[in-house]
Each structure stands twice: as C-alpha cells, then as structure tokens.
Length: 359
Image (cartoon, rainbow, N blue to C red; front, side):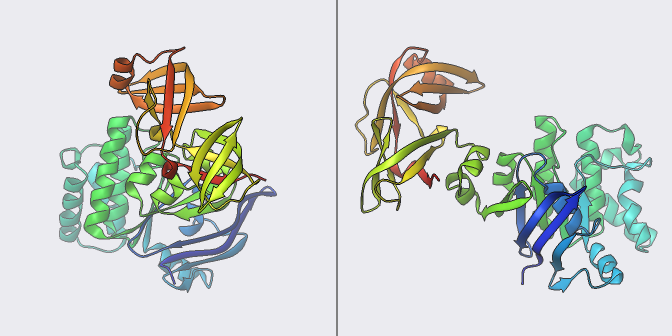
C-alpha cells in the first residue's frame, strides 16, 4: 500500500459536494502535486489528509493504517505530518521562537532546540532575522518561517497549500528553491497543492489534476501536459490549440484529420469518421515565411491575425481556416517581420499532436 492513500473520499459543505470519490496514492519519498483551478477542492483534500477535518465518506490510510480507527490514531498520525497553509501563519514571537515552538511541545531540551533551530534557519536563509518578530517580515520571509517551523519537527509528510500564491516572482522562486533543497536533504514525502502549473512540473514526481472535486487524471508531467485525457484538462494545462475535426483516413495509426477542409496529420488510434479534437501546444508550432523542407508532416498556410509580445516571447495567432496559436521568441518574430496580415506557414510535427475523442 502507498504511504498516503485515500479511498473514495468525499466531502460536502452545505449540501454541495466539495470532493467526490477521490482515490489518491502517494508513495513514500514522492513529491506529488495537486493541480486544478481555484475551488477544485485542493485545500479541502489537504485538510482531510492532515486530519484537520473528517470526511463525510471514504477512508484515509497513512502508512497502511486507517486513521479513522480512533482519535488516538488520528493524533499519533498527525504528529508525523506538517501542513503549511496558503497564507503563512506566524506567531507574535521572534523568528527563533516560531521555529522552536513545536520542538518545545515535544519536550526537547534547550541545547537540542538551539542546535536544530539554528541549522534550519541557516537552511531557509533566515539566520540573520533570528531575534526579529516574525510578523514584521515580508510575505516571502514569513512563508519561509512557516516552512521552517513545519520541518523542525522532522515530519514524514509535508503538505503545502499554494506555497507561493501570494508572493512576487523573486520571492516565489526563492521559496521554491528552499522547498526543493529541504525535500532533497530530508527525503520527506510531499503533497503540494498549486494552481501554478509550471511549479507543478518543476517540483513534482507525479501530478494529479483535480477538477470539480474529482481527480480526473494522474501521471508524470509529460503525461499530464502532453497527453491530457479530455478537453477540460487540455484547456487547463495550456493546450491553447484545441481544434475540432473528423478522421478522414488512418493507416498504421497515422491519421489524416479533416479540419474545415484542411488536413492535419497526427498519430492516433481513432478510426475513420470519428469526431476528434486536435491538441497542439503553442510552443510546438514553428512559424516560417515559406513552406519548410523538413520531416514535419503539417505545414499549414495562413495569415497572421495578431501578435503580442511578452518579455522574450511573442504569441502569434494564425488564421489557417481555423485559429492556430504559436509561441516564438521575440528575436525570431522581429527577424521574420511577423505582424498582422503577414502570410506565413505554421509547421507542426505529427508526433507533437495529441488527439482526444469528441462526444
């Protein structure tokens, strides 16, 4: 059995289903990300796993033990875990005393506490703020205090709820680096809830997509982001090109898909006549002023509808008889002179296309 496992977990709030039949397995030492839109039930699931709340239905097993057996079991199991909330909670105490708080409750002597707290404060880069009141720190620093306090008790499992949601990009990256370092040093099992998909990809061994209280897909980053199971997941993970078509032919799983009279070739097992959606990530579209001589099977002629620059990248919308979004570097866009009205070719490899059925 997995280290953390939920079976048919359900939770209601005022007759509304927050979680519905959630089956989740997290192996010991794994970093498992829960991704999904706001309101999908990620925080509720973490609170149930941490036993802050009791589920309406289903079971939770920690290291093979059903935690609903008794209050004693729940308490003993909770001591093996730590939970860091989205909005960091710090006590009106010094940074040192915040981190030492849980250790004092566990009966460590002053020497043991001092050695452990000082080491952790060095790890999270807060040693120089040791005597400062934690509530006078920045948001990113307070989040680091909350993480330091959580790991001070040497938990077997660490639950993180949107750890960088309220932080600026620099603070977010700093917190992420610290979390990664702590995980590697201590081999902690981690469940991280985030709506930041890139964060999920960077940190997690496996990812579960939570939508409307249900886990709709679990897999590694490639499986989730390159092979979403349905349109809803595809939209959420950034498949901006979701193009409807019909299979016109299929020989050896190389299908020709009719999209508004144009053919897109992709690898799929769907048969002739089946309605499908072609999913293409913008970064997998190459833009050129003339048809490219390459092994790519799809070279789609069109006219640029708009361009939008964002830092070093440029988003390009091409009207090919259907909308095709490409993501190119700003330098490439400038060198090619890409602008509204420019005639271009959008090239996509058949292997870069993911096909899902339409019902």
